[in-house]
Image (cartoon, rainbow, N blue to C red; front, side, top):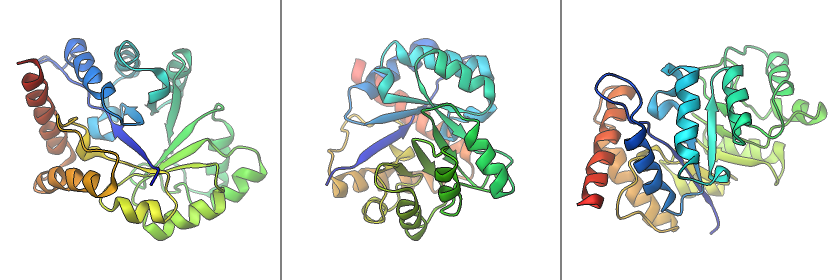
Length: 246
């Protein structure tokens, strides 16, 4: 079965809170050596929404030194982020934020550069990327290249696929049920539990991939917050990089 694996990238910081370019680049090179199709920079997994525009731009620069730009998308939290991503030849993944009606959502899509992806999550927008939004976006010529959709059921994914057609790239924001996501019409999944880039990276095989995801997800589910889960993934990644260099 053909499918895409998308991984939210981690950003490493020094004890003073500034970005560690050395650790982040070393991690990026480990990630590049896997078969993963795409890496999302400055997403929620690494608390990208709390970083500054300059920090998010710096993260792109670190990654493009190690990874081909066609394997990177940059999560964009502001118009300035879009400018920085485009300037570096990176397709932006623009977050739907503070939208409350379908007209607002369509206007938001119409203002995006081409090509763009969108990131839809109910935490950040009252109106998300819904099957009802797709036809009006198509009519107005502003359907993005693809979308990462979070908190969507397999039924939601199937409805989005039916509305958007076969050429639209659709990623399920969860990797808890990879086979069901793909059966519903997703092109692939976004697997945060693989963000630490395990040294024995799973093969491009759904059961093996799901097993690897579930092992880490079980650990993450015991933690109380996004921040604590991010910290755990960074700790796992640091251990792995230490093992690789030993």
